[in-house]
Length: 194
Image 1 (cartoon, rainbow, N blue to C red):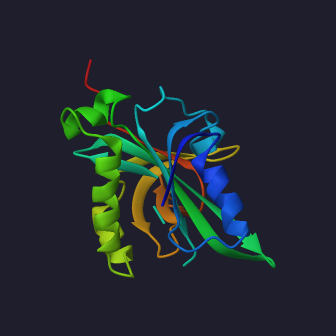
Image 2 (spheres, rainbow, N blue to C red; image 1 turned 120 degrees about the vertical axis):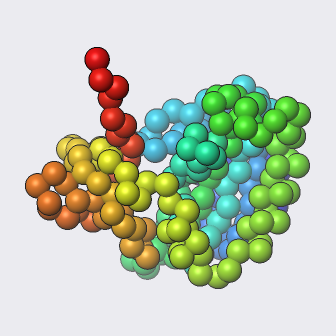
């Protein structure tokens, strides 16, 4: 694990290192990012030292992390390839420790980002090699009415499954099944009666 005070993006840095041969499960932590981004290339900003900013390299896949239905962290996974084949994955996490308090309030006061990281890495090391059954069982999106924003379109329907390769299965209102590789998934909630 390497800890730096400031960088453009922990994901961009670790992706570069991955193409140079960095080891599986390499970890890069920053106190501040100047060019952080999230899904759909959105800018991700926070005051220096306010949040846990960490990227992990996987050579061997997780988006939002929820606690009691509220967003606690955003996850961005980016892959790299060599010889025409994807051979590594970098996962960046922006954990709302002291900024964007909706989820952070659930952690309690005084949580230091590096103490939180130590706990995360401990739990991560304890995971089985095949985490898919655990992931699927905990995926809050399954069974929910969703809108999936794609590059140039959107699909409304119900999320019915997730496949081992990570694709989300959504059945739309016309009973057409869609297998979603990449998109921004929004949970639709019933509007209260007026």
